[in-house]
Length: 439
Image 1 (cartoon, rainbow, N blue to C red):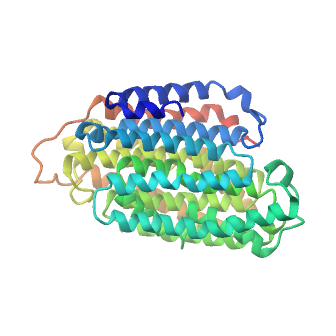
Image 2: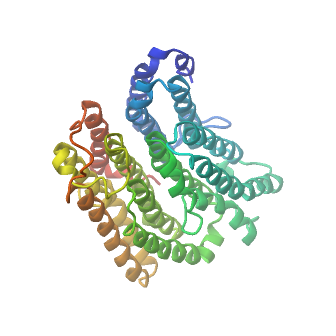
Image 3: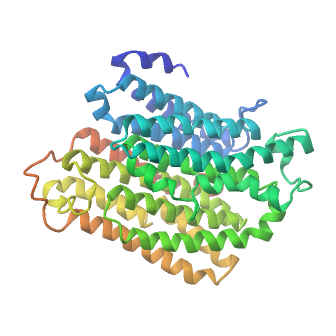
């Protein structure tokens, strides 16, 4: 919050970036204090899952500023841009550390406002207005039943504290169950309510795509993990509906990915496919499913954000996101081809990435829940690798685009940016107890 006045000064861009970086490092080293609830108050408090997602938010916000150097260079409302990033960081911190359902709802919705500003203010095409309306209407309309459900909880129990609600299933009915989880399923997003995500990603600047894929999709998963102690009884009854819908939807979306020619659209649809596995894991309500879903959320946040950075690096040089134009990049930018390979390998859950750990845990939990799911999961895993290989091979190999004679091989800032995505993604697997066993 104290960074906000610095946004008024034009020279403060890199100062704020450095300070956010140091804040995330300081927060990282406070890990031993979060193995139980810490910093408790009337509204805020953190446990291990809050800690992981707050750290991810701080880290992605640092990388957002680092990736948006073109805004600083052009001077296009750069002060307001850095203010939006700082405000979004504060909102995300408050969302993940809320222990009251109402404050969680308020901050959950407030985090959409700076995201909308990013899309409308620094998007690339006139269609960004339609994408912003899609984002707003899908999420706000789905959130109204959640607000009604929260008010019903307060009128019935007289409290909205998450501690006091755990295990109390006295007020749970079928309609209440749907009201409480529908907003989170749209936010993740689940198949059939996912149409806002590809349009928002395609029209957003690189910073908007990074925060959308890196953190905002995780708000839905975090919300589900927080409200399911209340909805446990109905979760067992209706879990089969959501598991079937999300996994079959993830399979269809994987097939959509094989037909995409737009880099950002392909990465956006792959996010829907990955989050479908997270929804399936949470809905099983098993220990491994819930724990592994958190690991895959963190891994996907870093991996997809890095892929959006790579697509933006190509876009800044070619002026196009089309795979037909962005072909043969290994001839023009051989050093970038290594980063394309490393992040693509992480996206298809190759070792030693955290994606592997999350997906193995989710596969085991889903198959132990129902072995019929094995047939869907086989194809889901296969097509996940197939569209990632398609993305890598089409972008790096093939004929060179004839309209470009030469381009920069890559700046130190870009290599640092990609390293800061890839390194923690492969480092966290050495600390599995924090990434998985957080319950």
